Image (tube, rainbow, N blue to C red; front, side, top):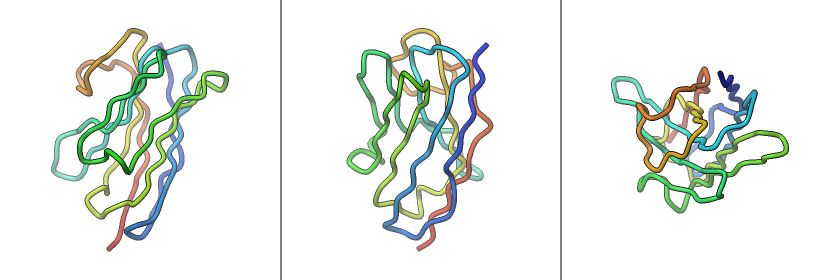
Length: 120
């Protein structure tokens, strides 16, 4: 079992930045960020593997950066140039094996979520 605890959400104006953090209780191989806006399905945002390779949703490429501090077992999501459409609950997810796609069904372990609100 892997426990995930997110932090760093908040409210910001369009064009601003936020950094999300997610600390895992044990070793993971793949970690990802997902988000879910009211009335919408959960969607993948970014994925990172222990190899260092990353994947991003097209909607956030060039604006968001995913990273991982293995010593602290902490995942980060640096979000720049935020837009109102980025408003959602953001969830950290993890797996103990390699994952190559941002599909929620492929991840067993989830954090409680942290709210990000971007105003225009």
